[in-house]
Image (cartoon, rainbow, N blue to C red; front, side, top):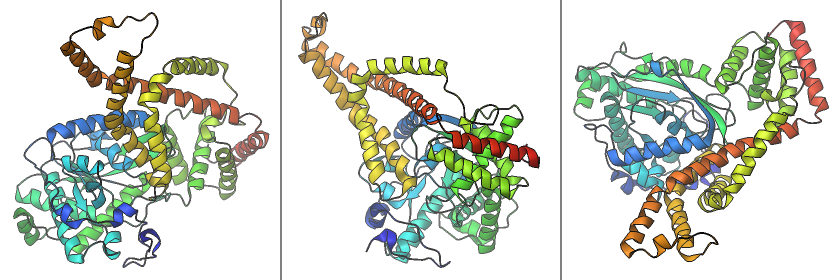
Length: 516
């Protein structure tokens, strides 16, 4: 039976999330042997591998996204630990986006199969990631209830302890990555974790941790070079929540104990209230796009420009939370659908708000220059970057985990491909250097040198090669931006029906006096 389509429901009579083939293969004995975190150092896992991982993740994110904005860092207390709670629509990109923008290192909890995969598992174990068994795996027979209770209890206790020691942590209360345009029902794991951390903090005489609702905003989550805004909201204080003495005693003795149900449920509902406004919270993604169209037109009417993704999200949020007009919303939905069908969005509306933008000759000249420069480095890109592109596209398009996992595979192809493919590319270039004669190029100084010099020179080249390879990758990312912008400019040509619909929507907004 296909585990992802078996119609298994939970105790709330809701369908369990679709499982990938990897998630159905639980290796319980191997999960028991994963390294436990160490809270006495600067990182819960290996300091060496953690430093490499965080550095690599940040570099790949710079290529993954066209723009990255971060706000609310002042809401993160540095004197105590914090648990970040966010909605979950973009696979591995969600925790990575938080981990790499948060000021502290993280104690990590993740889906069990992250630790047992061949390459990803190596990094997960080096970061001391703790496995979590979801209800979806348990009810489908991935392990016994006793096994799941033991493993989850140990993992949540380790996460709680890490938070108490001042580390950051991110857990997703929805319990699964999904494709909805609003929050799905929240689970209780994050609330139980942070309450146990609070109990341990009280035993140690320390300040309790906080929960920080985090808004993760992607322009189009599954597209390469989309925009990202990470929004750290005001923390939720849990210092006034009453906790029983037994809970405090148990966690002090490193034993997992369940917090009071009422406290867990109340805290879950509070997280729901605070986190929900940080999501689109629309019935459909089409409705969300329509709200953004209204936000752009409203800004145009005021002589303003939503020139950053953050500004656009905030303007759309204001439209969403205000008093609306159903007729205008229906018109905006028509415009939004026509824009999407043409590969466009609200940014393609002109400054007057009565049609589409014209083609920019200056931008065309700049794009041509960038393209010529990029083509001059095409041979190096074919060796160092093209294999990663092919691998990411292949894995992302054939995944059985849904559209929300597509960027996860593309990201992993870029991250792990750099470690695997770039050394191979460097060796290929070295072989060409030593074996191929280029007219007018004298390489005898190296090829005729002593073997020790040749070996040291070759090693130095291989070690330093990631620097030019990364710069080449960045250049091609910028060129991709030019290509997508040029493609959109061509898509705007001849859209008379769409321009007319935009004009009619603008006039309806002016007549109603709303959204302006």
